[in-house]
Length: 161
Ligand SMILES: Nc1ncnc2c1ncn2[C@@H]1O[C@H](COP(=O)(O)OP(=O)(O)OP(=O)(O)O)[C@@H](O)[C@H]1O
Ligand SMILES: [Mg+2]
Image (tube, rainbow, N blue to C red; front, top):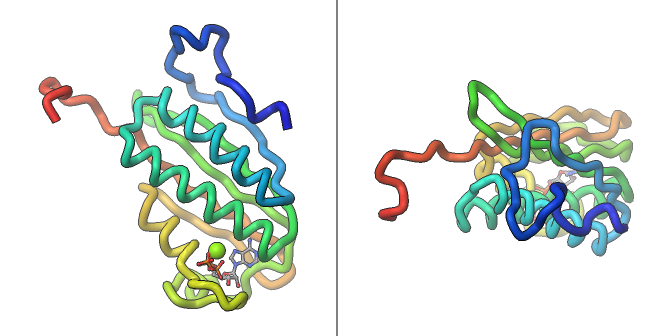
């Protein structure tokens, strides 16, 4: 999938900060697609100014949501967008599929609950790792997870950490 390669802006030597609206729709049908999405998002998160810890958090979320699409729904898409609110930039991740859906969302969010004999940590971890999290689903309705992380505001004494 060519669309996951490379930066979104013209000069990779002098990357501009990505602007609201930047992003990409990443079709997900296999684990390889999930890794492609992770790579693309890592690049974007770095250029948005997220620190390394947040970059890893965001990558983990892409992995978990992408794996959920592949394992539980078969295929779907991850939509990445740069968003803004009151001059603050953020990264929004949406994972969408038309799979079987989740009949009991509260249960699915609990750590340790899994219908696939796995750890059952993915959704709970996603909620903890991001600033905002919402999920829409239901039996037979597919699943839509939206999670956003905001770039921390720079403090005047930044750079001393
Ligand atoms: N996209 C989805 N479509 C249908 N069901 C889903 C989807 N995502 C999650 N689920 C349901 O929610 C449960 C919990 O998901 P979660 O990601 O927390 O755990 P898991 O995928 O089972 O295990 P882990 O992510 O730890 O490997 C899943 O077992 C599955 O039943
Ligand atoms: Mg999972």
